[in-house]
Length: 300
Image (cartoon, helix red, strand yellow):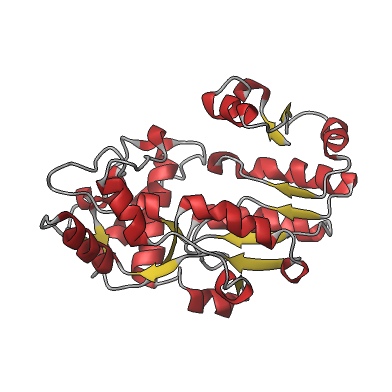
């Protein structure tokens, strides 16, 4: 069963889920809690993939899940490893939701998945993979040598399926990831596979930090385009400069990892994904974010 807003019932992605046999249910998170409770009665696991600009709307969903007797709730994390406060505003909002979940004693599991392959593959001078690559992948934060955890978006489902049926992960945080690479290693890989020489546009930590401060002063609304740009720069700094998004830092924060829990799970490598994209078999994510500035637009 999948819950969606009444206004989203006819969206192509929702209709496609229905074609695949998923039971689609209209649900209004701003409506009466009793209606949500009734919908969730008998549901063992709730997985939230709510829009990032509306994260606080998860609180009524969590409340209804508690009242309905849901046995495990997965809040909408599914991103990079980061400290609870000070690095990513999106993370801070997610932590506020998690604190509420703990306050109402709702059983939970947090799943983070590192950075997606789909938003990190560098562009080629020829433009041959532009159809699948985000403009935001044009720059390299810092010196490009900071490692970070990466996952193919298509592997997330298989990780989550194992996690939600595992008693070891109840009331814990889990990092699900495929491999750890640096930006320079990804550029090296694309040069090897494509035969093209890539322009490496490094952006200094100071420039990224300055841009973050500039946008933060405006206090953009979470559902605004400016907030998305802020999140983009904060991700660059957290992952590419601070080095937050690593298995080692996850361990420090108390995460379990899928490498330890499920070493048998087969996953897609970055090289395999890159070959698919070069063969014209890739898919672009976040179509609605095509106009965001890339890192190389930051003035030094």
